[in-house]
Image 1: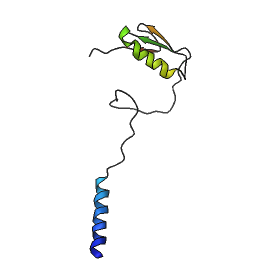
Image 2: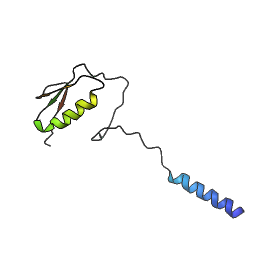
Image 3: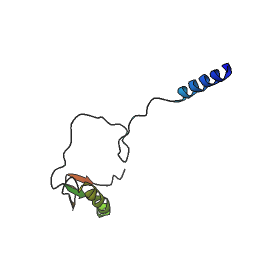
Image 4: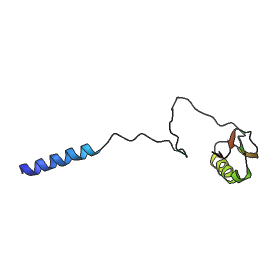
Length: 92
């Protein structure tokens, strides 16, 4: 009986030692940023949000973003480098 209690205690201590601190909550962003500075406040999407694409190859992604934001704002897509949101490929 004494051995059983000792074995249970050792197993419990080993399990506690194996658990690390709680993982930091990660933001649902792709790509995952190196650092996030959370601050109080909010961001409101403007009515008639304009999503610009720097090249036609990004049109499918702009369409996906437009559909995802449809329940929050009336978004439109235009080609160019100016808009509320601009999708562009970084050549780096």
